[in-house]
Length: 455
Image 1 (spheres, rainbow, N blue to C red):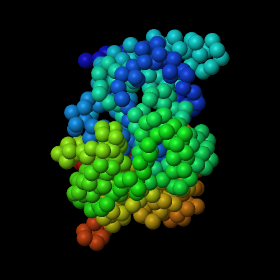
Image 2 (cartoon, helix red, strand yellow):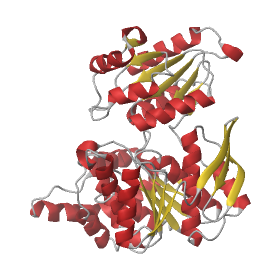
Image 3 (cartoon, one colour):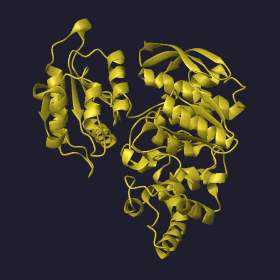
Image 4 (cartoon, helix red, strand yellow):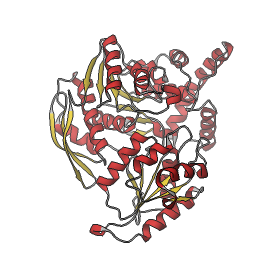
């Protein structure tokens, strides 16, 4: 059992570093820390993922399929939903507090050495995400793992995870996000993300806009990397909503897989599944070996995607989704329409200041009946009144309620949904919380603390 004070001290130390909202466009600092540790990131092959939406879900599906093949896996994702351990997963389980503390004790002296070197040269010390990347790579080497599935923190080219040499570079759909850091256009953002492609390796990409795909293929050509693209080399053939998920037919690079049960909701999760299958086929057999059906069924059965169309309560139904940009919000709207039959849908929404709040609301306006505008638990959150002005501009004042306190906002939304009259086929009212990952994390905590059924 880990010492609580030691754990708190460790968390205070890593969170005291410059946060993820201000990443440093450099690899040298992370590379130097790993060099001092003996280059643990070179101890295992890596599947490296970037994109704008779907990265975490696709990463988790890839990891689950690889684990079903009796490979010991490491999974590194961002962000967490309230607990740092959730970002560093070994064999399907977040590392426990004892492992976290042991790994930190191993790497922290080397982090301090690099901090001193950086400060002596006039640079900022290692950031939170740089330190976390070092911690994850070292933890995976100590486990040890057979393969790492690594999600970038932001962008790709200068993201600290990119010190590793990924055998397969995976691209989920690319859209506008983090424009102040990555570029103002889709092609500029894609160019930055394409920096994860390594010489002579393989690339697997979801369906992209023409400008994004052009950047990926250009980078692959320069690196002499083989590219497989959704719609050309693999695809979703058919999908049917089912209880608790969906049935999906996929044409992979090496095989056809009909009637796959995917325990995740939404058309975007079928796409993520196809990309994940192609990525595993590429990693295991360079696209020439089909995945054993029993292995694939097991891997998909174990796949989860917390915070993505996740039901955290019933009576009324409460759904959370990490959609925090217009592309993600559009996928959320489609998933809600397909998977639920609410007579009235009330949204609890909070958005961070660097996001396209108006675009997020426009993408959901056709499926949400009422917005309860609140504040996300983040220093970067848009003030509830300021956000309400944006929402009113999109949907009108009659569909907007302002409640800055999140718990009261949830209570108001649940009361409204519970009072909604039954609609077609006996459908009742429901609640969806979205707009910020920090909001989703807090709603999940509140649902568990209050014992909402289904949480």
